[in-house]
Length: 191
Image 1 (spheres, rainbow, N blue to C red):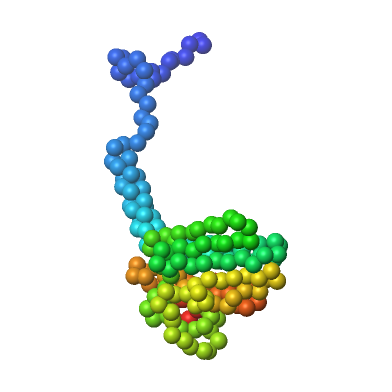
Image 2 (cartoon, one colour):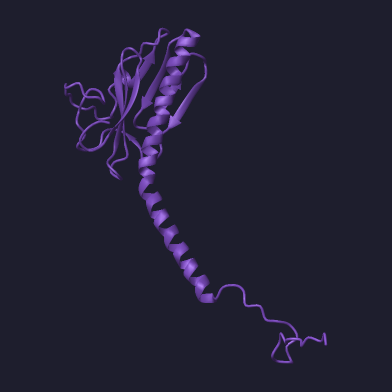
């Protein structure tokens, strides 16, 4: 009467435990690893292609930041402040209104200069006047920019390029009012 027939879980009487079929086969693991390898390879190639571009952008932004800091320091401390460019060394020195000086060296792939084909405008917005570009890529008199205590600066432009790697150029322009502007040459116009 209440006896139920027990179902056998193991058809083979020699088996004591069920075999669990879990996990991945070797072929599945190899396929996943090969897809990951391809994705990493594409990422590395893209990163390597963008590296010179990133370096020139970072160098330009760093110079803009140092110029703005120097201008603000001259205003707040009431003493003229200067940045001097050493083109042969690929560096510039920030001579602040205190006795502290900071020398910044450009990355090895970045140089003070213009790349070939850059429109020779006096500023990166292009006011229509043309000029012969300096051989060292700096238009500041004496290769230095000075900010006065009232915030006014000496006018000029610093050009940075990563030629011949990518032939890209950025221009950092300071006008007499002390305004600092960063532009990139896109191959046809300044942006």
